[in-house]
Image (cartoon, rainbow, N blue to C red; front, side):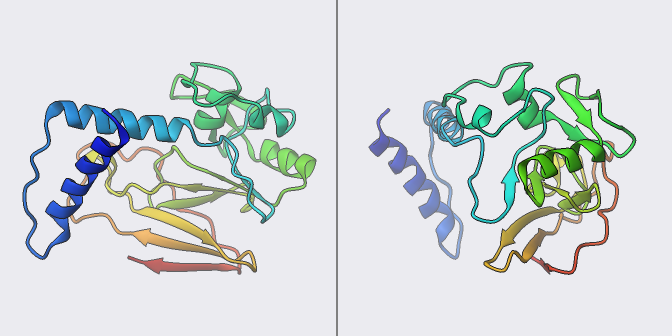
Length: 210
C-alpha cells in the first residue's frame, strides 16, 4: 500500500469524526494493519535524542551511556533489543528507594536512583531529564529534586488505571507548562501501578487542566 492509500484511510477516518454528528467509517482489517505498520515505521524513524535548544534532553538513563554521540549514532529505524543502550533509554525507571542501579520489576533494563540523575546532568551540563514509558497518577511526576520529570500522556491507561495524562510545553524563558488530560469517571479495573504524587513543582511551572 503506497502513501496515497494511507492518506486515503486517514482522510476517511477524519471525515467520519470531523462533523457535528460522528459517522462510521468502513476500514478493512488489511487497511488497519497497514495503518498500524506505517505508524510504527514513523515512530521507529524518529531520533532517539531530541536536540532542544533549552538545556534539556529527552531520554532514559543507562549504565552503558558515556556520551551523547552514542545515542546519535544509533541507526534508525531499528527494532528495540531486549538489553543494551537503546533498551535502557526506553525502559529504565527512576526509583527513590535505589542508589545507583537496581533491578527493574518490568523484567527488562534497570532502575536508577537520584544520584545517577545528578551525576548524568552534571557530566553533560544539563538541567533536566524528561522521560516517559511509565504510568504516573497525575500525568507528570518529578524525581530527584526536580531534576527529572516523567510525562505520561495516556489517561485511563489500558482502561485499568485512573491516571490523568499530561503534555509538557517549554517556552523561550524555559518555563515548563503542563496541560493535564483528566481521566474519565470510570474507575480502574486493575492495580494502581507506580502512582505516587509528584513533588512540589518549581516556581517556573504552569499547570492547566483540559
